[in-house]
Amino acid sequence: MTGVAAVLPSITLAVISRQYLVRLGLQSILERSETIRIVMHPYQRMMPDMLLTEERPDAFVLDLETNRDAIDTIRQIRESAPTSKIVLLSGPEDGPRLHESFACGVDGVILTIQPPEVVLAVIESLYAPAHHYDAQVEHNGVVRVDLKGMSQRKIDSAAQPPPWPDALTQREQEVIQLVRQGLSNKEIAYQLSISDSTVRHHMTSIFDKVGVSNRQKLLVHCHQFRFPDLQPSMSR
Image (cartoon, rainbow, N blue to C red; front, side, top):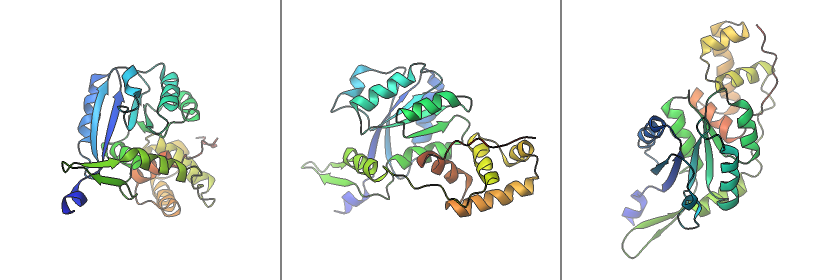
């Protein structure tokens, strides 16, 4: 039983991008995971056999920039593999396509401007090890983890995601919007015509209200719990 406890859960991840450097970069980042063993398979385009019942990946990462038919791909995955997760790789300028993609049922988004720590955290959050998972020891000693069943339980439990704190002020919500765009504190201060110290004060307040400890965890929380797209009055 000691060997079973030491085995990490494993997920199969299909990365669909026509950019070789994107696929190579993601593989380098995902190999750093210490909580989940991620088996990545790179593809230039969607392949029909990826949706076979027994062979489909646990999760898909779609490069929105190189997949012009991404919406159709998302719908196809959702129809044929409803328990598989879908994460978009997107640039900050892909706002309209992101809106349509989330309406089709994607589970998260990774911005190309985000650091490796956030990229890895978004993927790991799909199958957080804090949740219980089913592990069975087969006759040859191999441990098989039922991520499909765990995924379905997480879908059921996440049907009603927790609302964002009502205590967030309009200005704090504007700051979060700019953080999601990848802006630094200095850039946020310039955008909102406030001082750097005021931005730091807002960030501290946001962390406290949302219940996160840093910028990266705030971004993951935004993706996981659907931070609402607001219409802030960010005028300079």
